[in-house]
Image 1 (cartoon, protein in one colour):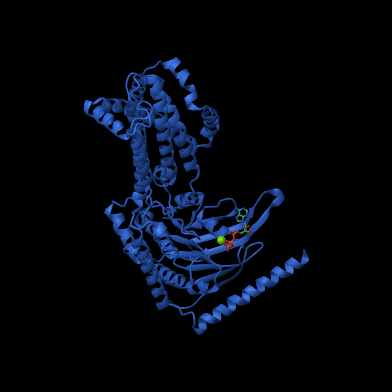
Image 2 (tube, rainbow over the protein chains, first blue to last red):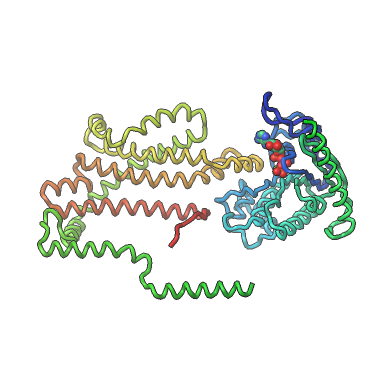
Amino acid sequence: MVVSIQVAEKAFGSNGKRAVVLEDIRLDIERGEFLTIIGPSGCGKSTLLKIAAGLDTSYSGSVTVHDRKVTKPGISQGFIFQEHRLFPWMTVEQNIAADLNLRDPGVKAKVQELIDIVRLTGNEKVYPAELSGGMSQRVAIARALLREPEVLLLDEPFGALDAFTRKHLQDVLVDIWQRKKITMILVTHDIDESIYLGTQLAILRAKPGRIQKWMPVGLPFPRNRTSLSFQHIRQKVLEEFEKTEQSVYTEGAGI
Amino acid sequence: MKTAAYVGLSGKEKAAKVKKTRTIPPWLKGFVVPVIILALWQYAGSAGLISETVLPTPLAILASFYELAVSGELADNMKISIARAAGGFLLGGGLGLLFGILVGFSKKTESYLDPSLQMLRTVPHLAVTPLFILWFGFDELSKVLLIALGAFFPIYINTFLGIRGVDAKLFDVARVLEFSWRHQITRLILPAALPNILLGVRLSLGIAWLGLVVAELMGSSAGVGYMIMDARQFSQTEKVFVGIIIFAVVGKLTDSFVRLLERKLLKWRSSFQGTN
Ligand SMILES: Nc1ncnc2c1ncn2[C@@H]1O[C@H](COP(=O)(O)OP(=O)(O)OP(=O)(O)O)[C@@H](O)[C@H]1O
Ligand SMILES: [Mg+2]
């Protein structure tokens, strides 16, 4: 087991206005798996990922990576934010290096390799203000990869991009995952994306956030969105979503 | 797509045509009004419409400037003035930067120091001039301290604001990337605060210059301000004009220098630069 996330309960607010966001969650991910978590907006996906990263520690439960308890954020749990969050005063290569010294030939070579991998060759000296959203997100991915994380956590990384760029970056991500054998956990609200990328798929339901269904995606890479087997899994995910909606309605009816 | 390309092209052609009809380059436009005023002024003076002691002609001022420059009197006075302004600015600005960083970094220092500093800030710094003369006499110390007092606050406040304005989301990034304390300061906080700090520097320089003029006019035995007061006693109005113009030009030059620095250091910013 590489990553184990257990959240007995996560709530926001204090006594009077306490809202339970996550409840009874258990996620065990094997090394090299690509887990996609899908769920409706506001169900607690970002909250769950922040807990996994160590960015949020006020919850009951525990997160371990390689049997080591995660108590604070760090480079072994790489994190890609929904918005790229680059440092605007640093060029592409400086952003990827961030706190590391670019004059060190070892660092420089690795940075260059990653720039090539995320297909940004020639843009080394460009500032983020001159980059498109997709290019910026690729820089953010390279920045996380340079630290050679054990797990890479991605919070709707392609949510704000157009369909073409998104497809391209999904392929880049699969390529990196296959090359570097990093364990990935990606949160999304795009059903196609979750099936296209994941080897495992977890469906989260809302209020409070619980795991509704956990299913393996046994499709070989590269995947084809139009294939029958892809559509079959899509069908199953949609059915699960219909169930969650019904359960939300029935619970709501009582109030 | 093709039609769009054609539209774009004809648009460019149009722009080129418009440019051809107007031949005055933009940097020249700024000179038009001053040149007209100077010409009228010179004419009025030469025709004897205005008395020499009230308003010497531009040519008389130029002649006086030449004389002062050749005799070395101007350079000597400027050296002293610039040294005073620079000393006061470095002292006040340096302390402002230091306190801005200290107070910006820690809520605790803020609650101890900021209220007192804000209270001091409400005192117009030129109002304490008599007090400074009483305490430190007419010599260099009182002048430098007066300039330093004025230069302190703009840098202090802007450094503080700059540091507090750093995007909290980028702090999360720094935590995820495990930035050391040193890197958090040098690669995140200071670069993020730099636009504000440089704005503070510009404002401080302006105030330091103003403080210098006041300090030198109050009483001194050298400096551009002294040169002006001395000339006034002997009704050498053109010399007074030379002094005023020197104050203006040097002030403008230092401001341009900081702007240049801003352009170099903040070239990553792509903010709105104004329309033509
Ligand atoms: N700092 C906070 N304080 C209080 N409530 C919060 C806080 N952060 C999140 N919440 C609440 O927790 C719930 C889950 O939020 P979260 O951001 O995890 O949702 P999400 O699944 O990521 O949604 P989306 O898909 O829109 O990003 C929401 O109802 C939100 O209102
Ligand atoms: Mg979210």
